Length: 125
Image (cartoon, rainbow, N blue to C red; front, side, top):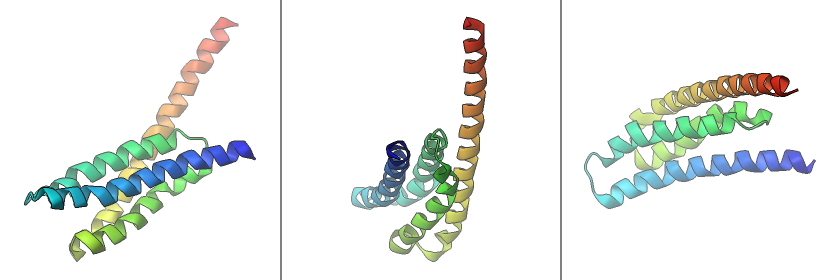
């Protein structure tokens, strides 16, 4: 029971970190005063953070990781409403796709890693 709670706590930590990235990046861009700052945030910072954090979530052993693309799409919607215009709602689907791709990369790399470590354990015996 405690082990399951620790797994969920790690995923919640990554989800909170994703929310902080989504919320703080446009605030920092607006405070900096750069004209194209929000565009840079939308096209560079958000996709990189979504990809990196979805790979991190996919290495965890909980089944909650498969809902992460849905979470990314849902938490991006209020950010669009607050900081961007209505044409950016489509990006929530794009970020959900990037997150699904990142989870796929993480699951495949985790499987390959387990395959190689399994072979090395058999060689030692």
